[in-house]
Length: 177
Image (cartoon, rainbow, N blue to C red):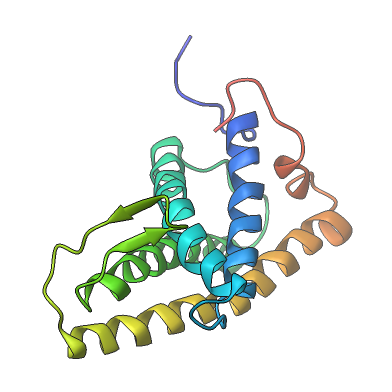
């Protein structure tokens, strides 16, 4: 018997991580326009700094565990589904890392609700900061079309194909991915 995860579905941990990641991304996106000093800003910056570690671990977990088997559908649809997932993973890494670089690029620490502060490893560099700000904003906004494609794909599997693919994120399997 192999210790390799089953390709038939996902583990309880993977399913929980999927939904916690979705919730975290929604909250962070909803609070991204907060102004310094208000609650939305504190949630976005402090929460993003804390959740960022979890999100990076989530990407590693996904890469380490792999994917389930591809559904019985056209090559182009499987390619699109794979591209959406890979784009999500890349955007998570880019958004989290640029989020950490934003205060650091100004020489400030990453502050987590005034409880923990991670000092900047850099001196202030306004040009680098501007670049990180643009990349962070663009990467964050790219989640919207990807989410739409992801939800449309899940709806296709649930309501048109009725092939059980959408249920994978609700029903864990023993030794799942």
